[in-house]
Amino acid sequence: MSASVCYSKISGCILQRFSCHHRSAFYRCYRQSVKDVISILPNKTGVPVNIRGWLRNVRKQKRVLFCNLNDGSCYENLQIVADPSICQSELSPGVSVEVTGTLVPSVGKGQEVELQADSLTVLGPCDNEFYPFKPRTEYTQDFLRNYPHLRCRTLHHQNLLRIRDSATMAVHKFLQDNGFLFVHTPIITSSDCEGAGEMFHIKTNEELKSLNSEKPQQFFDRPSYLTVSGQLHLEIITGAFLRAYSFGPTFRAEKSPGRYHLAEFYMIEAEIAFTKSLDCVIQVMEDLVKSVTTSVFDKHESAIQDLWKQSNVEHISSIADRLTKNKYIRMTYTDAVNVLKQNSEKLSSIPNWGCDLSKEYEQFLVRYCDNVPVFVTDFPADLKPFYARTNSDEKTVSAVDLLVPEVGELFGGSLREERLQPLQDKLESLGLMKNYQWYLDLRQFGSVPHGGFGMGFERYLQCLLGIYNIKDAVPFPRWVGHCQL
Figure 1 (spheres, rainbow, N blue to C red):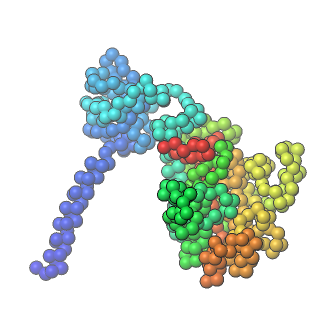
Figure 2 (tube, rainbow, N blue to C red; figure 1 turned 30 degrees about the horizontal axis):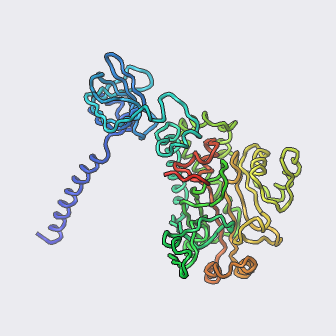
Figure 3 (cartoon, one colour; figure 1 turned 30 degrees about the vertical axis):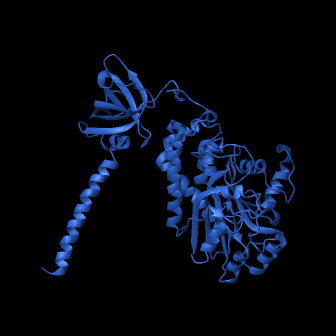
């Protein structure tokens, strides 16, 4: 027998043994789910089923027990039918159970099949005297926010988390399909990308203890912070790659308890090398929103409509429609200010050229454009960070904000200043030369025209789903004065 044939046979045995082991491990870890039973097995009644989950509702009659079981794998519940004597433990909403039985056609309405249980074992009891959520009871989001460790068990937040999951995957798919490299940018940084100073300063316990000593301890060799943006690090990456993006947590120490602010939130940020056109950046922004929204609707239309019913946003369905079907409107900052001035009687204050666009102004501009998203471009230089490319008029920069209904700013983007001397002049005027010498190096060694954007993920969900408070668009909200768990 040749060595190659012998090696082939040995390899085959190893692979077969691994395959068998892997298959058995798979079945141990990935049991049947409610989604499997409902979507795959409706035409296969009579098959045995072993399933685990949580009871949503329990209805006990003299001769029959009905339970609705959900395991989070899909929106629907699986109805369990059993003899009332099947389980001696207390059955109530919130209890976790393991059920074994046979799938049979359902005689009731609303489901094709139900599980005729042979055994039902309580895995984790639930004391309903203290359990905060009662069946068939609606709770406000303000109330649910008091239970961040339990609110994912409510139908509202299960819908939200599934949609959030699909939107996340759709973002990655769009950017990956369009040649963007995914990069994990640092969470700990020494750079203030936005320049607003609203950063969380990092200090270890040892550093805090040594503050009053003659030689205070220091973990890093310079002040360090939680990141407010991964943009500057992405610019480094696009010194070697055509396109790059990040999707991760960012932090702002903004002391606002308002419904649009979080201390920790997620940002999609992208950079594009070799582009001199802000239109190119704008087109990617528009295509990203439309692609993600279409994908999410294809998978979760009924769940989205359920969330809309709980929203207090008027015409939310038409707003979502405009996200995908309309060409987004474009206007310069100067045009936007003129529109606001012409409608000043509808506003609480009169804007002047050079003022920042407040939330009130942003939302009015979108309403003025019939709730079609609006790109506002060419802002005064003083309103944008140092890295935005200066326009030929020397007063404005090539920057853009995308404004969407109800939320206001969803994206911020710009062409980046790739020219060494103008960037150096800006940094000198701001006293930032020492901290950003490395940023100048990028302009000295093979600089290229480039631009990019950042999108607030929770703000996108807030707009799409009509969520009033952004704290209800994230599983574990953190805001000033609140950091539970």
